[in-house]
Image (cartoon, rainbow, N blue to C red; front, side, top):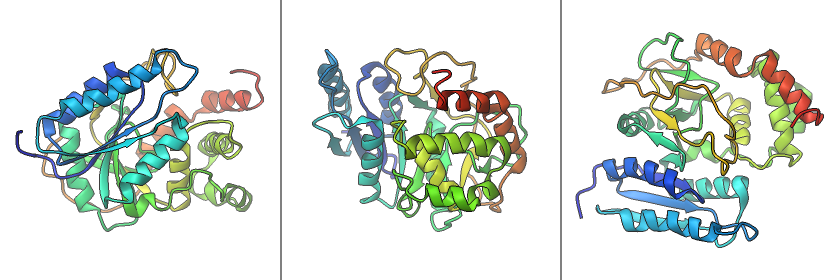
Length: 302
C-alpha cells in the first residue's frame, strides 16, 4: 500500500456505468484519499444486466484501492432512484464528516480540482454565507477578479461542501408554497431566472421529477447562500450523448477543457459576482429556456 496524500473525505456516487466510473476513479486514485465513501444505488429489477453493471462498478472501487484508505461502502440493496440515493448518500457522509468532496460517476476532475477544494473548504469552513464549492466553470468568456468568485449558480458537476450547509437541505422542499406566496425567492432571483427556477422547484415539489439537485439550489437560494466558482474549468462531464444518462440525455456544445489553477488560494471578500451571474442567467435561463420549461409543464413538448 502506498501512502495517503489527500486528507478530505471523498464521496463517490456510482450506479450502472463501469466505463465512466473507471475514468473518474482513476483520477481519485491519483490523489490517494485517506477516506472514500462509495455510494452506490441498487439495480432496477426490470433492467436486464443491470445487476452485473452495478456490481462491476462496486468491484472497480473495492479492487482498485492500492493505497492506505478507509473505504466506507454505502450500498443500496434495491434501486432507490436518483433523488433518494443521492440525498440519503450525501446525508450519510455529512452525518459523519464536517466537510467532503462529492463526485458523481460521469464528472472527471482535473487533478487540480482536489487541491482547489481542499484549500477553499478550510478557508471558508466557518463562514455560513458560503454553502458549496463548485469545480465547473463553462463561462470561459466571462472575466473574473481573482482565481474564484461567489455565485448564486454554482454547478454540482464536481463539488464540495460542509455538514453545516447540508443540514439545511430538504429533499421535499416543504417550504416552497410559503416561499412562492411571500415572494422571497424573487428577491434573490428575478426575471427569467425566477420563472425557470419556479418551474423546476414546482416539478420536484409535485413529484414530477426524480432528482435531488434542484432542492439543493432551492436550499441555497432561500438561505441566501453563495457557491464558489473557479476562474477556470476543472471538471469534464462525460455523461452526455448516452442512452443510460439520467438527466444529461442528448448532445451538448459545452467546452469542458481544463484550465490552470494557481495555488495557494487566498481568502477574499464574500460578495456575489453579479456580472458572472448575469452571464449565467443569459446562457442558461434565457427566454428560449424559460419558454421550453413552460411548454414542458403543460406537456406541449417533452
